[in-house]
Image (cartoon, rainbow, N blue to C red; front, side, top):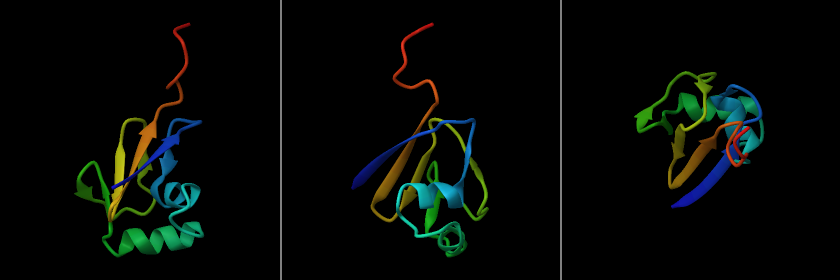
Length: 79
């Protein structure tokens, strides 16, 4: 299984855009089509909402690829 870690730079990212940003789709439209096909799961459940808000600590799966979403504060020291 391929694991991709995606670092958020804001509160959330839309699912179709996440697929584009990690290189699994060429465009947001292609991401929407992939989601509409039922091939994408979020936290183990098939997700049909193309613009579903993906937040820190969620896992998006497509086939044998998992995208682990890291929060905006991951890797930073305590203030």
